[in-house]
Image (cartoon, rainbow, N blue to C red):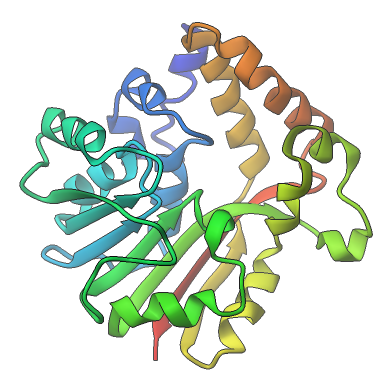
Length: 254
């Protein structure tokens, strides 16, 4: 399985490379979430015992990673994945004592205010976090000085600047690509509130190549994976890094 072997990359992602690629592909809901999280976490200060909200946690891979790699307590919140399904993943991974699964809608979070030391969101923020009012809402749940970090699909140039969604992207993603912004857009969007200090806002190096590598592995690994992943493979191949990337953004609450 050449594609699976290619996913073990200790030179680039040493922590993620300790995880079975087949296990991770079994929880697949998009680009490789552990690569994104490991890269994002370089700009965060995650310490044992912290209480972390994993917002848009999907089937739970990122929550397992946070608990194992950083010794934190995690609340895994997702709207689409049933808590029981995620809890089974946590039990199998041996982190049930450190990860709690919760069904939650991002605009109606069922938590006490100022109850988290950090909020992390990987490949989900684009669905709910672009509105001007969302960051002030989300910060209610973060303690003063707490950390916020997110990884989200990004563009190298704003679609508003381009005047259109590039055809190869529109064909696969449609209007949703309008929520894919540049890292600098996110920096301004957060800093203008004066509620946070942005500590990093960058495009992930070679993000489109990582995404393409992962999509090819999904096409090879999953029954029927070719039909599901082929449009993404064609989009990324056509793009060649011209427009598509991932934005990694971190901040501290003032």
